Image 1: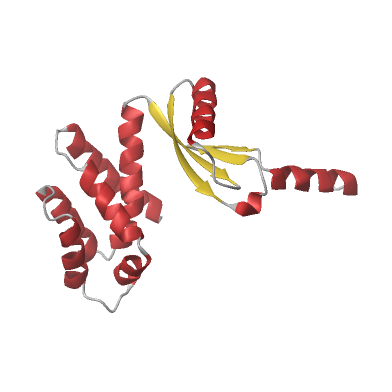
Image 2 (image 1 turned 45 degrees about the vertical axis):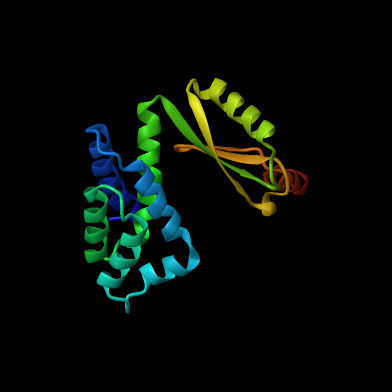
Length: 175
């Protein structure tokens, strides 16, 4: 079973708890942020560190959060799956947004963008998909310019790198 499938199972259970009224989102965001720190992610992935120590580390982050999050951390530690926490948190957030008729678009850009440009991108995508769109942007200078948008399974590649490659192939007669 892929890690995405495993993460989706945990995310579904957490989403069901959120629907029932348990306030888990802020704690999940804290856990995801903590797990994304290089030193912490290395500790969580290290097989030589006992699960109890990993749990103790994350318990400090969610000390005042609901008991369900504490149980989640303990369960994931027992199964050596704490490294999945950022992905689980992202999937839960996507499920919550979907329930609000909102989608998340992962946008890759070559350089930093202004809030005004991000707003315009979100508006254009919202018109295209017919739902409210939240952007998750990341920077990748290798695309040279333009942008790459992923909404669910749909990929829209308007990167300069892809266009130049297509032009190179057309000129070379490879298409």
